[in-house]
Image 1: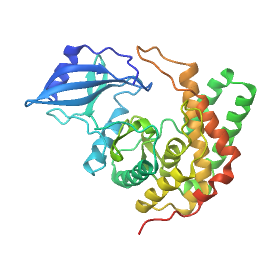
Image 2: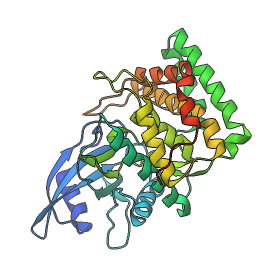
Image 3: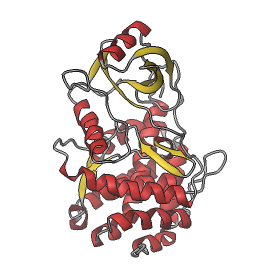
Image 4: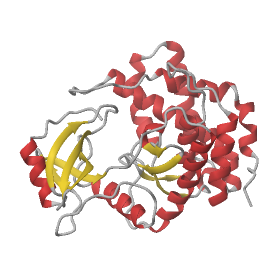
Length: 335
């Protein structure tokens, strides 16, 4: 992530010691992303070297963060491969560094797969379904803070920065998504805690073996279908070298959906609204990238994402809806 807060080494070392994680020997800022300050924290404990991820939260406050951290703790306890927050002797997992909220979580093994194949998509699809089911009895509740209400508030802010064609597209899509949200079929969609940002760079692999999901700090209560659509828009599109191609890849989408439905089959309402939620996922990330592009914050390592990518994904979803017909039909679920 971008580094907004320079954390003094001594202050980080004191937190690591308080969490009984050993002696801090290294602290390295993590590049990529734009929301929080993240460091790799290298620790020596009982003669062994371990790495953790130390996060200082820049936008989220002490009142919001228990939802995200307790959700990770809950999912890890259910066997879902996610980073587990480190607790102090009182069981607290939300801490303070440099006057800001902070957490330390386990570092997942491996690396992100930015050019996924069928096996990667199969692994993510099945794990996503298990994560949705594991979250059903999570006690805390918080809405998706980047959901429809945020879209309605944010579109007017970015409109002055858009071309007439972009202006027309984003207004029309926002109106359509407000219409969808009022439908009985939308009200019937299954809901629960969702990741809401499970892009390729938020999943780790060792080879083709999935080692975990991370970065839950956009999580919230929403439809499971929206979470699935966000994944399909990132994992199952053409990945050109310049990251500008958002065309649908049927082979990856079918692998992803088949693995998901082997764990949790989609309902009739979900099948009906999948194309609409694919559009919703594209709108959400086009809008947030426009926000970050035109209204950036200062940071020592800041690399805002190209907003044009998800504009192209949205236009593809609108222009080639016929290519998604197979996604409406029941997938072949392995016996």
